Image (cartoon, rainbow, N blue to C red; front, side, top):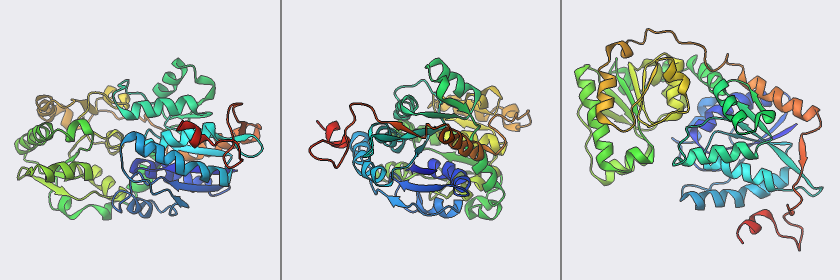
Length: 392
């Protein structure tokens, strides 16, 4: 079985790690990095931390407007798929890399008229906020995919409501595999700034709605710093490049009890999560990692895909409201973190189940589907290729 895995952002590198290790025991994997996250702190360090091979192909797309970035991914990824003719294209999550790979694999045609099947890991997650580009990306990927690998019962139910149940399997959350693997190795990777400030609050902020408006960014940081002072807790703030740019351009000084550090690799992040007293974040993945670490989380968004963490009492969704943030951090019972923590996301064997699901589909004779009748082959003049047709 040949699998072409497409990743482009840090959370996808993390999730691909366990699956790549499981795949490569018996099968061939071609790992394609779109270049969506392209500097060392956002990319190469994660491959080193996760002990997975460097990408076989780097499309080097870089940043840009959504349409520009996605279009360039389409243009560069299509010939890679045509050259290698994988049985599967495997995608993760909800980024522009996910969207581009889903579109390419659903429209591309090999010389004999076949096309690769598309498998989507983390299928069925829904925030029900269509203003989020990630929500649109994940919905499109789900509806194009041939195999939907759902992490939770709620995700499986969302897919069923959208008429996709026959293509869906609940396999658990591969993030549990990755986090458990990293937790065994993370102790020696706690950043020095955090080691010197025990009992810290961990802060991450990167979403446009929180950081692109300097006034909102300052209000959130100030509310957190005020609450941290009342708790006599320092704040450790790994600053995302997008957030750093806003802080620098507007000459925004951080409060004295907030220590900013450079972006960290996955092992450092797991060490920070495990050492934190509480986590405040607008990241989807960090919410779930906080739950795995047994650390209370305050989510600085108006919604969450991980509703189970809220139902279990470990996550408070406060949006961008500084008063709600202060209230959450003043709740002694919430911060105590002594409530039950059910096994919501699987047993750490999700990667094995993903590989087994791909193998079963291959053995059933559906590994490579017939291309749609209106799909035309690239590189077979005088027909036009998919990318050229999209541009017209």
